Image (cartoon, rainbow, N blue to C red; front, side):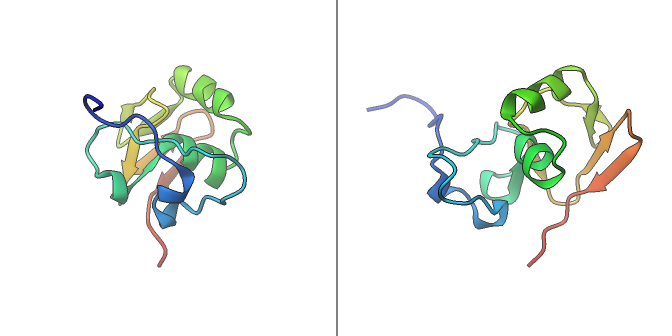
Length: 105
């Protein structure tokens, strides 16, 4: 028996709205505990790397976040797996860009 929360998430079990392909790896980033449910959120690493193409790797995303350049709803977030949810505003300080997270159906 394992204790506590599962710490891994397989790519095939990830929500479909994350739009991850099946062949690029085995695991997907598991969202941290936060204000949105796991099935209704998008981790910051996926938003910055896969959607905005600000980084090529997870290490680059971590460096961006550790420089405290990204705000979610006006608060600086340094967690790579922070769950950004529906209607959250993600702001980039240096480029003065603001994005609102809305899902397409």
